[in-house]
Amino acid sequence: MAMIHSAPQVELHHLDQLWFQVAGTRCNLTCHHCFISCSPHNRSFGFLTLRQVQQYLEESIPIGVKEYYFTGGEPFLNPDMTDILQATLKIGPATVLTNGTVFKTEWLERLQRAAAASIYSLEFRVSIDGFTAHSNDAIRGEGTFERALRGIGQLVEHGFLPIITAVRTWEMEREQEVICGFTDLLNRVGCHRPRLKILPTLQIGGEANRTHGYSETERVTQEMMRDYDPALLVCSQSRMVTDRGVHVCPMLIESSDSLLGQNLIEAMRSYSLRHGACLTCYQYGSICSNATSAEHVKPAPKATFQAVRLSPKSGPA
Amino acid sequence: MNHQRVACLGGLYSNYLALQSALSDLQSRSVDAVYCLGDLGAFGPYPDRIFPLLHEHRVICLRGNYDDSIGHALDDCQCGYTDPRDNYFAQISYDYTLANTNDSNRAWLRQLPEQIRFQLGSRRVLLCHGSPRKVNEFLWESTTSSHFLTALCQEFDSDVIVATHTGIKWHRPLDDQRDFVNVGVLGRPENDGKTNVWYTILDGNGDRLQVEFVPVEYDFQRLADEMQREGLPDEFVETILTGWWTSCLEVLPSKERLAGVY
Image (cartoon, rainbow over all chains, first blue to last red; front, side, top):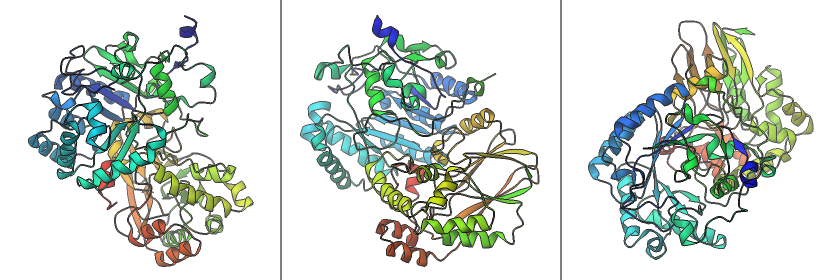
């Protein structure tokens, strides 16, 4: 209990990034490191419909949300996915996190047209976890390397510049070798402007079984928040919509205390950093945003310039 | 302060030749004041050469992230890059600029304000560097929703928010006669294959804010030669000569990145 009492509270500075668990926990793959144990059979979270997403998009306008993100599971298993992205691009920038293995040409053609017609960017983040079939397929499943590369090729053919996302399942000493390996690989498949985002592992979900979970002492403490810029934490700027309601962040949806409300306003309250995964977020900073980063980020120092907090008065009256 | 018509210069990045051209162009444009939104150093050669020009022409300056770093001799430029290649080039430029900015100019940078407010016609204008809430926030046209900008205007009690920092100009009219303007930069071309740079004139006469982006031609060949002489990276020189960005690319969203060649 002492741990819970000492967990630092983090306020939502401003709801910049609104996430949608648009495919619930359904995925065509069963990656061993998945931090929410998604699989073809995991129905614990369901699909979001176009209508459900639109309701949250509308609610997000008076709050002043800056960007929208879609994840799963595999978002393109959701039959409404293309319509959802088209609807989003009418009001703001959209990013979709996909494994790249289930694209249909017709969807990509529609999305190419929607992206060209919008003033906003449509970003695709495609997950690959090694620059060889051997290293990737050991984590993501047999044959997924070739299928994901084909997906990246399809995106490039349709005029997109995918961000390749890899979870760091290798030793830090190999980081430079891995980055070069990815860059060469992407050039070979026609992706000549490779954008690479390397993520730390989160020791929860499937990854806790693959390696290990967080120990009880691996937590963010009050002391650690001194001289730390809380704007670097995902929960200071994001919320996540699932078919159960609005959660604090994309990582913790399987923790019962992450569900903060049924609408965005309810979910704008503060949150205690009581989970092990909060420590990883603290150490790496802004791990869910699109900024490409292929280097270990040190525990982030306090910025000279602090972000000024936007008060809830910018929300609906 | 009340104005009807002002000029706003974005990041100068030590490009004193482009600054000279812009100030000379402004002689005939009858503006009430000239503002610079910060990032006076970086990228270009001889950082001390811009200061006498700014003083002589009474340019009212903000303190951008770069100016804060140079003023306080911090370890890096606080530009907000996340990629190692971007940071590698940013550091070369920063180390050169810090080593070549004299103490009195550094003291002057330290005392500059972070934001400036004035009245433009009937509008309340807020000048900032990146965004009003964070000096090094990148507000790109393709990743910033209009309702987010409206929320910023409401929160910071302004009708017009004016910023720079990203290096690419854009203007978004918002609901209720509000506007967001990124004034672009004089420091380097904006990744469009052209060698000219840009500044912006804001005119508060009339029903809607009038925003004029002004192209500035200058002796880019001379700047490139001087950058080479100072040992600045060939990648920077290439940008000046071709108009295409070769570094700081990883912060670009896909729409802005696709507009360039790298």
